[in-house]
Image 1 (cartoon, rainbow over the protein chains, first blue to last red):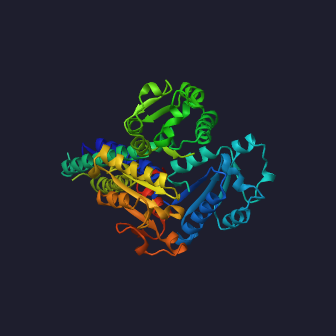
Image 2 (cartoon, rainbow over the protein chains, first blue to last red; image 1 turned 135 degrees about the vertical axis):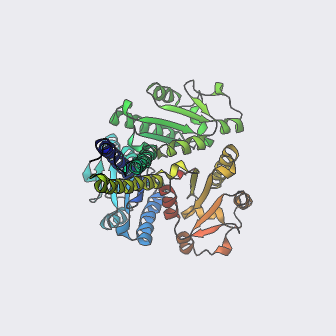
Image 3 (spheres, rainbow over the protein chains, first blue to last red; image 1 turned 45 degrees about the vertical axis):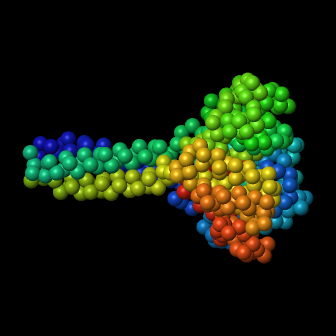
Length: 147
Length: 147
Length: 147
């Protein structure tokens, strides 16, 4: 048994914790080394923009493989009309959702415009606040696209 | 005293530095594990967009608590008009600023449009270049929103 | 030779690998501690936006020094017209490219609009999908600007 042993063991344990902490922190930071994600913002009342957003989602799925990428479309403000059940792109919204694209409506906008879930295309889910959803996704390492 | 001791100590020291470097690098990278921040870009001469930007900031503060999030609105190009003292949203700009939202005007745009600080709402601060301010905030881990 | 030595060495080796892994992961995550980059999206058929995008790139190069920053303009959807050889900003596109700004056209958009490389300003390079190019740059730590 060497004299250095207890100290060495203590330093070794400290090092282990530091190394482990570094690894965990790095892994959290490096969410961009995991499965890619992209959040697509729609905040305009403009069907050309809605179709461009849906085209973007479709192209990303076709080119990367839909199992290899997370895509979420978040509509808020004047963009909320994209997600109404009688929107001119409602069939495309439903199709995108069936293909695994998450479609989210801003709860704050819905309150302000006195809309309820019944006013939305059936596959749409409501989040409390569209902008915070978009912030959170970026914090998780997702890319951001505003078509 | 064991024969292995000096080597063990050296390897231990190297490990300590590597672990520490990993932790520090990770912590720098992981600014997105700190207080959330969001930079909101206004580059259009369009009061509807200005109000949407101000609504976004207000909603984020209401939903997250204004002490829990950093918000900065950066106006440049045609968006600079939002921040003039006689802009139709000047009272809302002043109110947002009083609530802790940082409001920044692009110095390059001001030079190009021959504007001075006297032309701006009193709470606005000028940064050298709006786009570089927006880049820097993103590099610090802030989310980006273009309403 | 101390009794603890073989165990200490093993633990030391494990620690070394953990520390190293942490450092490498952190370094990958922390691409935002390397040379700054910014990807500028153009997805509108609007010369005012095209000029704003080109002004943004120019200002960034002037203020940061063009050797200190990577800039890429990606045009897709209705924005593709910016990059045609007969676009009204074609001379500025050529100039930006000569100054080291990477100019990229979306291959998916070109197929959809039956365009070939001959239709584009000579310095433009085609990428398979504009949105995926923009996603990838953000994953590498680049900032995103939509003028």
